[in-house]
Every structure is written in C-alpha cells, then in structure tokens.
Image 1: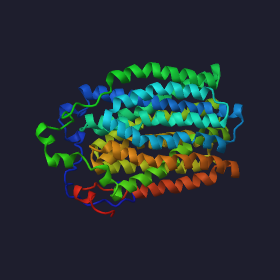
Image 2 (image 1 turned 30 degrees about the horizontal axis):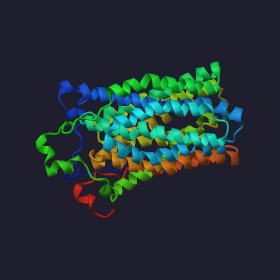
Image 3 (image 1 turned 135 degrees about the vertical axis):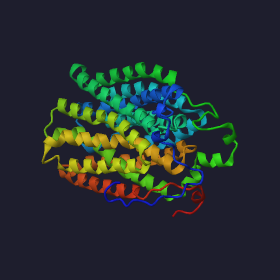
Image 4 (image 1 turned 180 degrees about the horizontal axis):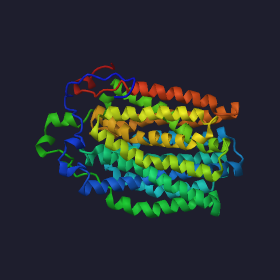
Length: 441
C-alpha cells in the first residue's frame, strides 16, 4: 500500500471486465505466461520498433552544439520543436484507427523507414522554421512506433504476463535511446552534430527494419490468449473484451487518466527537452551531459521490465501509484539540483526510473479500467493529452528561463503538478459494464 492512499475495500467482480490473470496464477512451469512462441517473437519485434523511437533521444547530447552554432534562444528552440508533440498527439488516434483496421505491422514498418528521413532533415536545419517543419516529421515518427500500435498488438498476443511483455517492449525505446545517446556523444566529437544525425538515422533503419518486418504480426482471429470459438459468439465474451470508446468517454476514469496524463507530459517532456541545457548551466561538460542523459534513458530498460513484473504480481493500480510516487521524488530532486549539483546522478536515475516506467503502467491501467478490445482507440484518444501537455511543458520552461534567468520557479510548478496527477490516479477504479452507459460520476 502506498503511503497516503486509503486502501479500497474489495470490489464486486466487474460485469464482463475481469482483470488479466497474473503470473502468480499461472502454471509454475509457465512462469512467463503467454510470453513464448509466436507471442515472444512479436514482443521482441515490437521492442525493436520502439528502439526506432528511442533513437530520437540522440538529439539530447547534440542540442547544446546545435544551439551554439545556430545562436537560438532556448524559448524559441522549444517553440520550434513543439510540433513534435502536437503532431504525435494528433496522429496517435490515427495510429490507433489504422492499427485497429489494418494491424500494427504496416504502422510500425512505416516508422522504421521514416526515421531516416527525419534525421536527414535534422542534419540540414538552418532556421527555426526548418526546425518547426522537421519536428512535424518527428511527431509522425513517434506516433507510428509509439505506445498505441505496439501496446495494442502485444496486449492482443499476451494475457498472462502482460505487464512483463509490455515492460520488455517499451524498454526498447530506452535501449535505443541509450545507444543513440552514446553514438551521438561519440559522433559529435568525430564528425559534428550534423553528420551525427545522418549516420544515426541510417543505422537505425538498416538494423531495425528487417527485424520488425520479420516478427511483428497481429494474432489470427479467434486466437487471442484465452479465447475459444464458443466464447467468440457469446455476448458475455463481447462485454468481457472491453468497453467501446464512445462509452469510455462518459466515464470518470477516462478523464482522470487523461488529465493526469496531461500533467505528466508537462513535467516529462518539459524536463527532458530542457535538461541538457540545464545541466550545462550547473557546470557539466558536454561529455558529462551526454553521459548523464544516457544514464537517464538507459535506466528505463530496467525500470520498464521491473514495473512490468510488479504489475503482473500485484494490482495494476498499485504499480501505477508506485510509478507516480517516484515522479514526485524526481521533481523534488530536480528542484534541489541548483544548490546540490552532485545529486545529478541520483536525479537522472530516479527521473529515468519513474518517467520511463510510465508508458508501461498506463497501457496496463487502461486495460484494467476498460478492457483490451477497444484499447487502441481509447488509448489513442487519451494520448491527445500530449498535445497541450507536451507543448506547454518545454515552451513554458524555456521562456521562463529566458525571463527569470533560471528554471527555479518552473521547477516549483512542476513539483506541484506531479502531486496533483498522483492524487487523480489514486481515485481510479475498474469500470463495470453497467456503469459505462451511465453519466459521468
């Protein structure tokens, strides 16, 4: 139980939306649940697709050199980079629709090719308007290989051990980010930031496109874990599969999750976009910035797998609250870095642990609240929270720094927002089918 959270009394079984069996309920000889055979291949293929998105983290170590050469103000850079966020938000429902209609494979294959185009564009940026245009392409990339498509296909393949499977998949973005950040730090010294973008983009497509093409598949109809032909024709099984988007929109849980996600993105994207510049402000060299940024991304590999295992063995809501409690701790540490720079390693570790685990616990809690049948559409629409949150965060932090000469006030506000998001998530509960048609509670 998380401190400060009142333990809820046992709830009546939901009408049709039973929680996914955990690993502790499965056969001892099958400790990894459904994560085997074709499902395992899909999981690791989806992980490779997420590595494509992780390559975007290479921009972090390259940003200070870009800003120095082009002479941009921080607020202007953050504003010019903002299309990545709103395009990701707007494209996520489209990715959800395309995934539901055509399957995840064509969606993620597009992303593994598109990454080379995006990085080529970044290597040729000269003006803020060009950065604005390229950032639109980055947003399309993130939506295509992001949480919606891969989370949905893996959730359809894996029922028992879904948390572990999602943890493995989403750790791909951190593994890709760790490798991309390391490559960026090396290539920056060897060939400069422009050539570094070109080589990282080409290498990402060359290595990952074949792997994704050979492994990512949607399950055949009627073969989803735990399903039977008789159940497929059952009205009960239709209810058990999940709540439709139009009904989910009328529930309190949908809006609690969406608003909390908005506040999280204000913190997460705002901090990540400004962090390399802030670490430079407090005295770190470019090499140290690259190392700490890589550590922040790399720790997410362990965070995502760990939180996935936790959500399989304990309540999905408990895992969610543990994750967001660490977000609060990270925000508090960030506020203290200006007076205690030696805590930077502690901060990047806790920040990476908490924020990188978020995209494992969120699909899990969406399935916990609404089921998996309509998960792509529900989660895709929920991701619209990225539009305001991901734009407001980095732009506000950048301009507040330009106005006040420091990030101190901005970081105080971020700490308050993380506490508010935790409080909202503590109010969640599964949505019974009978309540899906009710008015907002």
